[in-house]
Image (cartoon, rainbow, N blue to C red; front, side, top):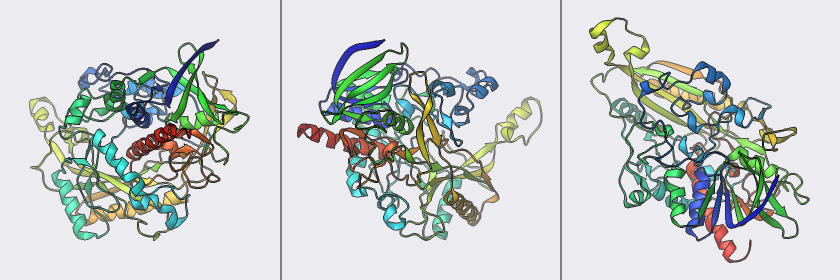
Length: 566
């Protein structure tokens, strides 16, 4: 059954996550009647956080996932923050099957707010070196923009989101408009100071994150309060202490009176009109009734999250675009990129047993990239960021004691010795063999082709991982740590949840899909500003860059609408 209702809007935004929420906010503030389409369920800030105030003992398995559910959700259960108290914001494996031509863990969050309800909230700007990487090594197409193009939009986003961080004065990781930073604990300070004394090319700084550490009038207007250092963010935060679409951008857009949000609407494809030479609307399938409906708009922003954005555009076929909307270059779906999270190092530290720390800090210290920054100097391309934290392990969880009775219980409440963990966030190189395609035979419950995902590591990733192990162990040894152990977890790509690419930006339409304003080269009223637009990953967490690109693209799109160019 086809629903004949036609509804017209100025703008349609596909997806309500990090970038979709920003597109909605910016469009509505500029006066455009905006429809946000979300394939998942509705989630309302404050009202739909069922486990936000639960105690660990309220859950059947102390927040762990039971064996039966682990087996049923083999992919999503590998995610470190998928637990009994957070699973309501993750998508079950069988909801949208896909084909793994090579192992890939596709972690999804289908609901209003998307993965902004479960993200890690780490927010670093890119530097000039990240946008100029191709000039140095030629391993990816040149970005059509530079840091100066995006810098004011980083500031625009940071002021609204609320980013905690320190002004560190590093060229490799530019400072932003920060709230006060979180504090180092005592052993992290020791490591920080000894690394600074021993190396000229590396610094240990506090991670920058989207958790409010200060009160400001703008945050009060959003209805958000300070972070309580509970580190239960993925349950949904009733304090509004961390940024999400449903705590900030979507309510802000709603205040304008220009926003309509429709959950449970699976976007099937974008409709292209050959005569008009532009997209005219979006075809959706109702998740509950499976009825088809079409919405029309003058401009469309695709923010469905990287792989679904690729899927939607590949599935948007017409006589003009038989291989997918805007796919004149034939590159759509190719050069998928991600972050290498395989390596970690653990070590112990003697002393400071009289010291502890308060609360559960929502971020960790980092060592910004120090490899191949100014020039190509290693036997691998690009670089990596290191993430670390020092902590005191509880004796009971280490299994270091045995006993019974009151004396035993008193002893196990004392924290154990200090430990340090360090992990890699490595940049991967875009290559044509890492790609997604549409299956020719199999479809899902909404009549859309299943997505074939073929993504893997390469020799460059292995060399980079080895260098991280070598340098990490050396730094820990120099700083006075003991019992240093390395671990390659061998995890499949995807579990980093930083997948990007497939619709990369570029200068030349023959080697890219989008222009410098995230606009399809050959369909001027369609914009892509989620991770699909990226043509390299940098070593930083990507969400801040998605948000800044989105705000910039909306500003351009509205100007083009006003000038009647789209």
